[in-house]
Every structure is written in C-alpha cells, then in structure tokens.
Image 1 (tube, one colour):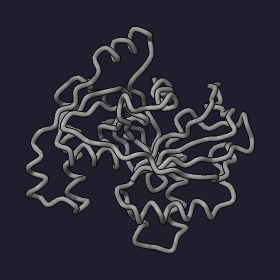
Image 2 (cartoon, rainbow, N blue to C red; image 1 turned 180 degrees about the vertical axis):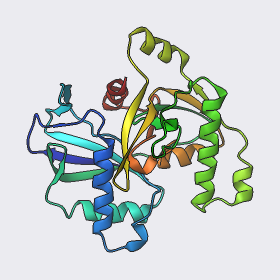
Image 3 (cartoon, one colour; image 1 turned 90 degrees about the horizontal axis):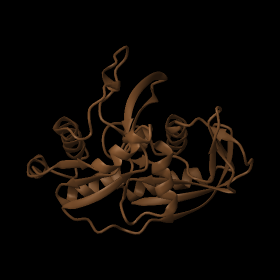
Length: 265
C-alpha cells in the first residue's frame, strides 16, 4: 500500500539539507513510537521518499517555495499504514529541518500491474552495502552495470522476503530469476554532464552516524512478479525503513517524479 501525503508549508523559503532522508527517518520513527502499539516500535517493513515540492538549491540546502509539500509512504501492511497515518494526523505541526509542515491530506496511489519485466526509476537512492562503525565498506563503489551489483540486491531482497514471513523458505528459493539492468544511456549522459548517480549519504542508527553510498538511476528488473511487488512496496536494497531505495514505475510517473530523479543527479 503506497500513499501520497500532502503537507501545507507555513514558512515558504525554509530549507532542509540536500540529503535529508535521515531527518525524515527520525520523524517517522518518532511518530511510530508515539502510538500505543508496541508491536510496531521495531517494525521495519516500510519505505518513504524524500520531500517533494517546488525547490531551489543553495549552500544551506534545499529551499521549498511551494505552498504544498508531498511525501510518498509505503508498506505492504495496511494496518501499519493506518496506524502511522492516525499518529501523523494527530499532530498539528511537524518541524523537519527548517520546514514547518502541517499534515493536510493523503491519497492512496493507484495499484500497479506487475510483470516479470519492469522498468523502474529511483525516487530515493538505493543503498547497496550495509554500514558498520569505523568501517568504509558501506561507501565502496560498485558499478551498477556489474553482476556484483545485481547479486548484492538479489541476496538482500530474498533475505528480506524470507524475514517478513509472508513467503516460505521453499517459495523464496523458487525465485531464481533476478537481474538488474541499469540504463546505460542514462549513466553515460550523467557522467558526460559531470553529474553523479552515486553519492555518499548520512545515516543514523541508535544515535550513531554512519555514511553509505546511494545510487540513483533508471533500470530494468527481470524477476518474478512477487519480487517486483515486494521491492515496489518495501524498497530496494539496505535501509529502506530509513528512506532509501524507494522506486517508481517508469512511464507511469508524473512530472514531479521525473524532477525527483533530476534532484539526485
């Protein structure tokens, strides 16, 4: 279940850091902990985008000038989404960075018809490798066009599918087909324009700061339909519950979603 949450922005021109997923992760976690359902306090099967709106970039960060700001939030568990929305809309105002946001409304996104071949856009960066304290491994660059890149995501996806306990070990073991094919022309275009499709992002866990490498590019995924739906609802790669790895289906995207790809380039 994916929803688009709309906020009113009280102070136009206010800003968040350009890479603000960690602020959103802290806010989402805080809202989850506010509710009266302890079973969700350690729940990690959800995903969200960055904030979207009319923006300009400065040295301070990303300034928002639109009256509305949106956030896409997703989880396969409808009960959890309803719990989160109830807590969110009980708040009169949220402070994210310098933004004073008032929860206004939400809409459920239209369901997607999944196939064994899907073309996706990244609307938040994919983190390939987990971070660990005092270790640079999480920042290692791996080419999106390599088999190693696809293999890491395959292992991570199947581990998460088995852990969620909606798929048996036997069923997960049947999902042999998994190949991610990066959009070669896009990668060449980004590099020729001296832009980046891979950046270092801050991430916090138990108040400890880590740094991870995130990738943003279009790709085609060859995988069984249940796998396609799982990553669409849960995100792709590591730290989806911290706002990384949110995807959108190519050719079904709005202008705002196209702009979100450009923002990370």
